[in-house]
Structure formats: C-alpha cells, structure tokens
Image 1 (tube, helix red, strand yellow):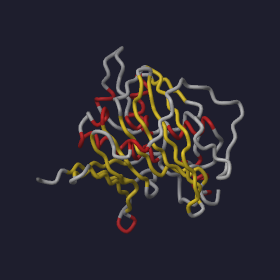
Image 2 (image 1 turned 90 degrees about the horizontal axis):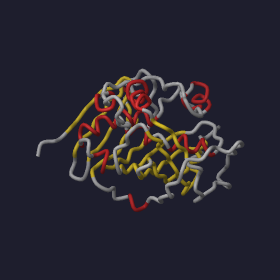
Image 3 (image 1 turned 135 degrees about the horizontal axis):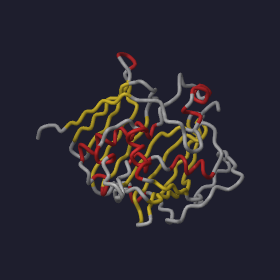
Length: 277
C-alpha cells in the first residue's frame, strides 16, 4: 500500500490579546523569566493548525469519534513557518510539526491520532458533568505539598456564538475554512477542535493563581462535533503532580460538554511552575 501523507505549511502569528486570564509565558517578559528567548506561541494554537491537517487526513468523522495524543517538544515563535506532516502507519496516523531553518530545524509538536476509542481512554478519570460556576472572589496557588488532588474543580463555562466560532478560525488561527466560516444565517455553526483542546488552561486559572505555565501534552478523545450558539463547559480534577528537573508538573483529567452532553474527554499535562520562576 502506498504511503499516505498529508503536508501543510502555516506561518505562525502572535497570540491574540487574551480575553481571559493571561498566561505570562506568551509575552516577552514572562517567557524571559522562564528562560526562553521570546514569547511562546500558545501550544494549543500550534495544535489548532495541526488539527486542520488531521481533519484532512482522517476525515470529518474524526471530530465525532476520533482521538489525538500530542506533545509539545520545543518552543514555536511568532513569524516562523510551521510544517505539519500527517503520515499513515500500520497502527495509526503519526503527526509531526517542525519549525526553524537549517541547524535550528526542530520538532515543536508530535504525536499520534486515530478513529474510534483511544487505548488510553479507560485510564482517564471522568469528573461529573456539572453546570458552570463563578470563580471565587479570592483565588490561591499551591505547591507540590499542597496540590488539591482528586478534588473536582469549579467548572468553567463559555457561551460560544457563531461569531466567536468564526473568529476562532479566521482571527485566532488565521485560516479560511468554509466548514467554520460558512454557517447559514441563524443556524449554529461548527466550533473548531482547537477551542475544546484549549479549555483546560483557562479552567485552572478559573480556580487558582499561577505565574507562567507551560502546556506539554494533551490526550483528547472526541465524542461529538461541537456546535456554536450554546454554552460549552469544562470540568476537571488534578490527578497527579510531580517534580522533574526542577519543573513542577500536574496532570488533569477533564470533560468538555454542552447542554446535550459530552463533547470530549481530555487529559492535560502542564508545567504549573517552571524551573526558576
């Protein structure tokens, strides 16, 4: 069988001005404090561009019954050209995103994807689907000795209008995709998978105070294509936390839902306190 390969190129852009709680790693000062040469492009935006190629390779059904497991390996900076490659092998689809030129050529994201249920799905804890709650007036942080393990976090909701769904694609990702931009007037449009993948980070800042944080890996099981003109809610719990080379990591298991039920289950790996900060 001939190799199946899909390749796309995207010029990365600066992150849009945050509409929520800002992560300092995405500006020059915060990134510098964590030891980086410049502001990092949000990893979930890198994934958003990669998801376009995954949809091209696996088809639209991937958003209803597919999975992805990706890791963020190296920083991506605004203005760099991102090469996205999705290749079929014997077991699944392999995803590789590279950036940089010459000796600076580097893998910024890699992983795998497929249709059906992921082999790791049963390992994920599943918090109950619950209505969104307002953030507490006073939020606190924690260290490795006081991580609130296995405690349901206050769910975070966001009403996604058709215009917001279009802006995610046209403005946040800079893409021209009729599937998301061409919704009939008055009918709910589709919500890009980038939005679902990005719900865990604002959820943590809805519950706690952090400095710079670094997204390192996501495992996502899609259950149903998300549609606009409704509230999309995310809930989760922290299942693990540990030190690795001075970075403090945490692992959250969560569920993203709308009024009709579950949209996706996610395991989110992040550095919640980078070394030196």
